[in-house]
Length: 75
Image (cartoon, one colour):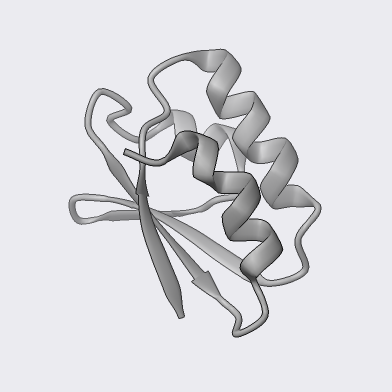
């Protein structure tokens, strides 16, 4: 498992993030405090508090390309 902290404060960033995660075959979760949602779910992400940093957890050993794409959202 790999994890990174990201920020998705604008709706456009959420859309870009979901477009990247939907192309991945591995399981990706997004955590905000005690809440956990599927990182491929646009509605799930909008249910989180986007004013604070979020934690992305990627359940794959071969995710270097995905991490590189998600680096633009890192905090």
